[in-house]
Image 1 (cartoon, rainbow, N blue to C red):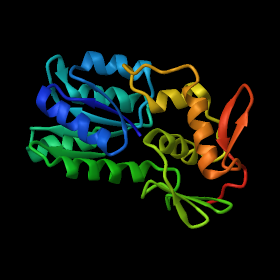
Image 2 (image 1 turned 45 degrees about the horizontal axis):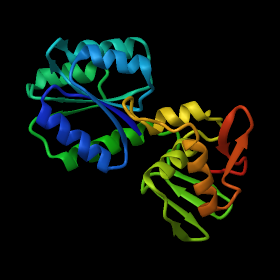
Image 3 (image 1 turned 180 degrees about the horizontal axis):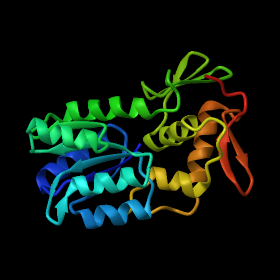
Image 4 (image 1 turned 180 degrees about the vertical axis):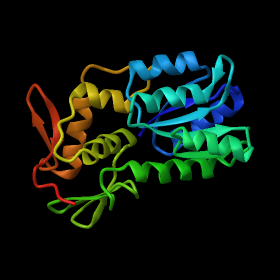
Length: 222
């Protein structure tokens, strides 16, 4: 997933960013509501880790804006505000989960995965394409029963397409999902990753629709 972190404490923000990246996600980290709003306008995210006490306002204001605009974005509040009334307010205004500081980073990643499963289009988290089995929960691709070793970005492309069965993803959409706002992207990067995936899985997994983008083959089933 592509995850936006809003956390104003430098040490905590850095630790969360590194741990979430270690879990295989693409991460952008900002420390203010102003930067968060700009990031949401510039890029598409799957998940938001939202601190409440920020230098330029309360994160709940951003939470209300996102839900008012009906953005399909999973939101987990991370905050030192541990009163029951605070948790109730955040959840009632549209947060999907709530974790109180200080928290364990492994628990945070587990909560991210749990919330993400509720947003997934595939309830069983498994896509079958011929002899290829894509297990989204375990982040694993098997061909003829054998695990295929994919790099983090190769897997990210497979996952992006698998979570959108039948949909066409343009090169620009794939780039947006794979890279943070500060990353440099080579012009042919996506084509290179697609080529590597095909070498590992065979040519029948990903279709190229010239001038439009990529999708899984039509034989995909759940």
